[in-house]
Length: 590
Image (cartoon, rainbow, N blue to C red; front, top):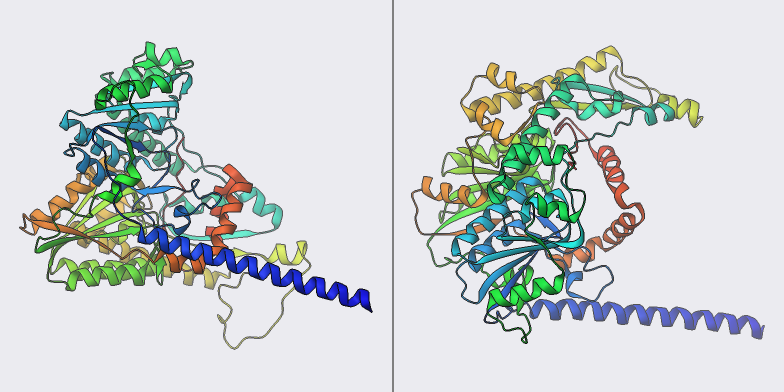
């Protein structure tokens, strides 16, 4: 009996100690978050400073507030991120900041799309008008990294480093073979021969139509990529194409020989050059400030006293019903933000910033309606980021003007639905059968335990046709074109930004700041401030609500590595419901 009580007592003590330790950790965590929030003061910028532009972090539409990033938590630095809007705002401020003498651009593998990189590249080109220098250095340049670095006054590479320059590829993963093995049939209902989002589920290779459109938009992206580098490095685009085609950059010295980089240097040599550019002597320490720190110093807008405002509404991520998140377009949250901007008399114009592959057709229409109502009262300009396709185009098609980057992916005007038939999986693989009764012929429509009947397929097809007709009608009205013309360029086809302008899906190529300026001009206001909607979600509340999910995501990424994207695609496909206006594929260009 004494042994029993001894073990019970030891167990109770262990539980109590564990609870105390957990409470102590929790209190320290809360205190750390509160303290770091209170200490969110401006970072002082020393005289003769170098702005450290680290672009090897996740570049989002807006900078996300992460409570963990301010604490010494394992892995907190891994997920560092910054919004492209803060990067270009900071560079604009640094251009006239007497304390900032030059920019040190460090980039190896940027986590951003090409249109986002184009925005930052434009901002760097604008910074150079100040006559301040930009120095780029890396041990390894991926193609995206070199696209950014090539704008610098001097581009340096480590003597034992590497520069990747080989051309682009686009690859699609097909699941038909796996579904066949599992006994799953993907029942497809769609409108548009180019709407290839469903192809991975019923075929094992690209259709001719899909191959055609991918070839065209990939070549369009590549052309923009080469033209940008050609202008910065004074090497013709055809020569660059030949360098990539023949894989001529195999060793670091090749990059110098073909004038892709200016010299091979080590980090200590770069530091000495930065000291010289910033006015420091060799014995002094280099004064630097990171882009993340500097961006916090720059007010959201330098003209907050202005009576008139331009509202920027960020629509970023998949489109879904409900509230969504900072990385997902919830129809309720975004439509409420648009409505708020419309009803605020101090807001004279609206810029809808879209970076979305689409999603729910119903949610897209809810947001579209708010744009239509807003357009009747004040100017609405749409600014497209990396992707504004399918539902992402739907929500913006009513805007007064649509601005794209040359390498924006847009269009994809089409509709589809996928209803899985799991009969073989249930019956033959798992030994599960179903039986029951119903009061109507179509009471069990959309059941996944059997194939669709001809009558059910007709019903679903009619619904898809109806949504498609609404889609092209919205586009025709917004773009002042006939439905027949819109249908001829639709069918789910994807277009690159420059082609979208040629066929009338967009009005001009322009960056984010140019879109804001155009909105103000259309509203006839010269002095204005910029306000951003929707309000960012409270990071502390998000932490408390999603800690388990964030931890799970972190460790899943660690475990799966590069294969995490496969997990994401499968998870996303399972979560979709209703008729979809979505990009025909996930774009990953290498």
